[in-house]
Length: 126
Image (cartoon, rainbow, N blue to C red):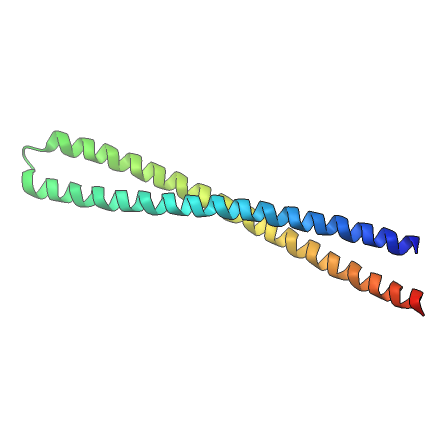
C-alpha cells in the first residue's frame, strides 16, 4: 500500500511537472504569437517602405537623393528589426520544440507509471 501511495505521489509530481511544462509552452506560444505579429508588421512596413522608395525614385530621382538616402537608412533599420524578429522567432520555436519533446517524455513516463500502478493495484486487489 505504501508503494502504491508512493507511486501516486510520483504520478502527482509528474502531473504537476506536466502542467508546469504546459504553462511554459503556453507562455512561449504567447511570445511566439507576439513575435509573429511583430514580424508581420515589420514585413508590411518594409513592403510599404520599398514601394515608397520605388515611387520616390521614379518620380523625383534628381531632386530626392537626400530623401532616398534617408528612406534607405529606414529600410535598413526595418530589415535589421526583421532579422532580429526572425531570430527571436526561431529561438522561440526551438524552445517550444524542446518543451514539446520534454512534455512527450514526461507524458510517456506518466503513462508508464499509471500502467504500473494499475498493475500493482490489480495485484493488490486480488
